[in-house]
Image 1 (cartoon, rainbow, N blue to C red):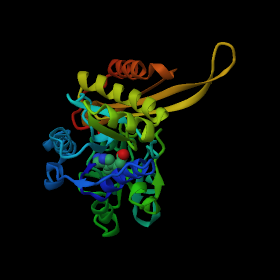
Image 2 (cartoon, helix red, strand yellow; image 1 turned 60 degrees about the vertical axis):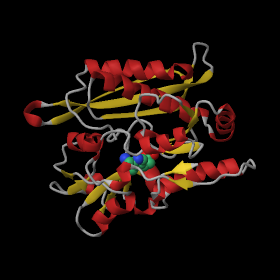
Image 3 (cartoon, helix red, strand yellow; image 1 turned 45 degrees about the vertical axis):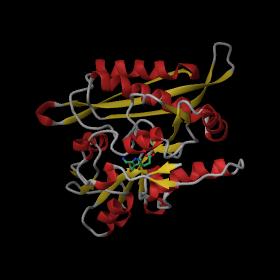
Length: 309
Ligand SMILES: NCc1[nH]cc(CCC(=O)O)c1CC(=O)O
């Protein structure tokens, strides 16, 4: 298995490796350095896929047989020769605030500095109208957290899943309600890939680590993102959840609920977010994502630029 060398990547790959080892498969873990690890330039200038393409090259060369990504870091276009073999059970997909003195978002006074490198988080924070000063930051989880512990920033926003995977949930001062902050499409989920020709490995991964509910949810969120990318370059948030609903006969059925948001340019440079939500049958996940994207575009999504994370 190939992995990036960051603590988060090693933990994520380790989870999948452990699941495989539990079935008696021997696994060796190989570190692959990506240009995204070497450069500290803002992600917006080095492009989507900086963390994933070197891993995929190592896979296609045959250096490794399985790679694990944070699903939200994957470009939406499929990669020829590579198959998404499994989507393991998702971690909590929500974003988390780490603020000084245990503060919550609502307790941060106007003018407080909040660090994030994601256009999606920036747009949603600004749309709350709390008078926060958003500071662009990069780096691994520890580096970002240290900006708060060192007093350089009042707060940072990070994915709860990443913090949980590296054992830092205790540092969280508030887990943000998706009503305020919709996560990135596929946040908290992993994508396990192998070469398309390796049918045996694909089946092994599908039977040991794949989670159907996560796959359905992530399919809807990514379909929304892909449809919006085609029509706009706005920061996008999306969250799908499996919910219980009643069918026409009053029988309980599982359906998929999807919420989506994208930024629009407001008056005088103000940022606003359009939001929409919808419900569909579980086998309609991709169509649900497309339909909700169309609704967001009708509402005016698409005026701002920046990566979705
Ligand atoms: N943007 C980088 C990135 N890619 C995946 C995670 C965390 C794990 C996840 O979201 O699945 C993070 C850090 C973050 O956004 O805080």
